[in-house]
Image (cartoon, rainbow, N blue to C red; front, side, top):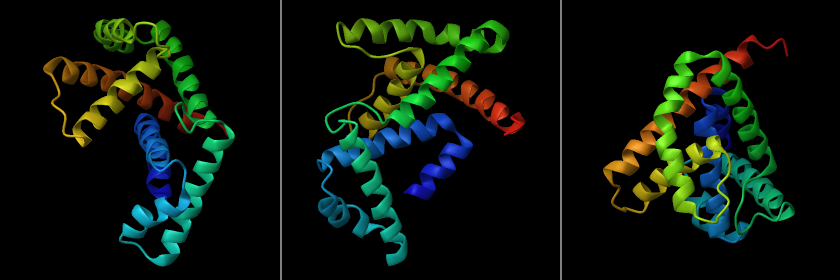
Length: 179
């Protein structure tokens, strides 16, 4: 699981964030109980015992961070929120400098407005958080076998296009960064 997360983080930051949201929800579904996570999740992975121990340690670290940050009911780890903030800052830069990104973002605007309207008084975050939530929502619907409307598919595709463009620019900046 950690290896998957690390690979996603290095290759596609949007996929990484959605994956980590899924891991947070998995931990929440067991109320952070590592005994149950080990019994019902980790023990079923077709990997060596050594790898299972690494996975257990990784989940335990995530669960501990979630408990420490009081995220066992809802919310996202600080590390993930910081990445979303970095993507938001990149989003604002691209809106000023990249005509292709502006065109891509223009196509997502109606879906963003729909999401804000549907949330009513609930705080749903910034544009990038809404895109991530839209893609994650589609994943959850599919995992739960729920019917997905054409409008939901259209929105998720538009959200995904924004995230893909952001990922491309994010990866370019990481690659070109002198750090």
